[in-house]
Length: 164
Image 1: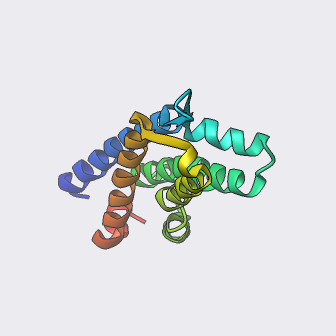
Image 2: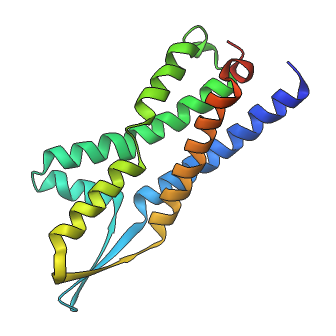
């Protein structure tokens, strides 16, 4: 392994840790401020919105958001970090894990979140005004970083970087 490939791997790991921190901030920080009837304000985070859907019995949308916009992105970041660091417990499973990340990555994060925001805005109609807050920007930055790295690894040749 060349020093360049070590530098690249560790740079990508640092970027993925940054993306994970941005993701966690994006999940818990308010993403939308909903103003209803010009009287009531309500700040909504991805976590509080998902919890609200689940507690109101909207199981399908709540579970889809929980799985694909919260749990899978966290797992994806951690798995990418583990693959780049060549953790021993991943040895021999790297090809299957890369394939799984490639397949499931198409279903995660931004697209599901956008659908949820659209559903929310359609339900609100003319009754409310929505203002984007910082959480949406942290979440989006995390999605862009993680997906850029994941796509870049697919194009660069993940075997050269992961060593399996």
